[in-house]
Length: 191
Image (cartoon, rainbow, N blue to C red; front, side):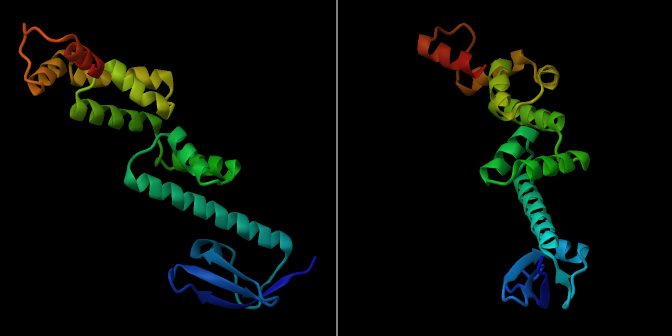
């Protein structure tokens, strides 16, 4: 197997935390500083095809991990949602699994914490009932035990009777008022 020899290493112009490796065969390869440092690459290093494939794989793992961190930078995510978002970017399934497991290990992904935060935000801001909340949590593929626990907890903190009163006040409806069937249905759908 022919080996490639690194003849130059340059920081990238747009992202100085990445390096460009220039090989003796004229090929170039962009690499993150993490992968660069972990592989102890220097000018004159010879890299076999197997080692190069490992570099490519390491670089892809860093790329997937950084994408996952960017997604988490916007808001919390469930494990299933993270897998879906990374799959949409066409990353390999094995690297997605490794990344999700790493995020679980370090505590950046936690379905229970996600479900609790999601439920509290939805109930507090939209005054939704347990049926609607369950329907909004289903796409996140939260374990059913966690789901039921979270729903029970959130409605202990925000009793349904209080939510109904707040919803009626918001819609300017008083107890005992006659309502059109359409209005009744709309309010029931929120709960």
